Length: 192
Image (cartoon, rainbow, N blue to C red):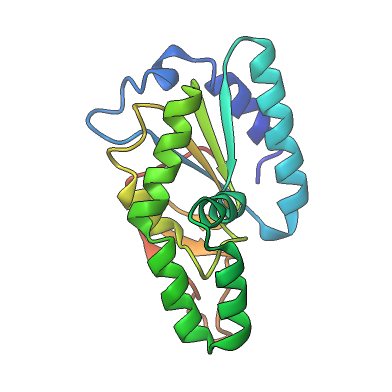
């Protein structure tokens, strides 16, 4: 990750074209900042710092963590304790199916949309992509959010590699040169 990534993000978030999603055609206003997973803590601190700095110049940021959103959604549905119990009692495949049924991509993106509508921010920062794997994956989440952004630019902080064509979560390989957790996706702008 470039050393000036967060300074450039701070500047970018103040640009009218960015805030109003101008000059991107009919594309969705999704942006990715990939980073090495070992920098998770540092990135999280930098994201919080940029959010505070933007608030000082009257740019409101909705800062979401996908893991915390999953927990909140399960609590709202009254399913948090039952999901914990299910995880203890059932095999992992059954548990993942049950979790996906409770927090499927449609429900999850509607919950994110609700947060955006309630807060009406200028920009949305989303973290926690690595924390929710394998329960949720970024490609279906982004694909499902196309019409739920309320026209707000969404910046995802991604612990891995995004080359403009595919996501490679955690940047891992299987030892034979094949990438693990690779997903093709090409409709987000790389801000790194």
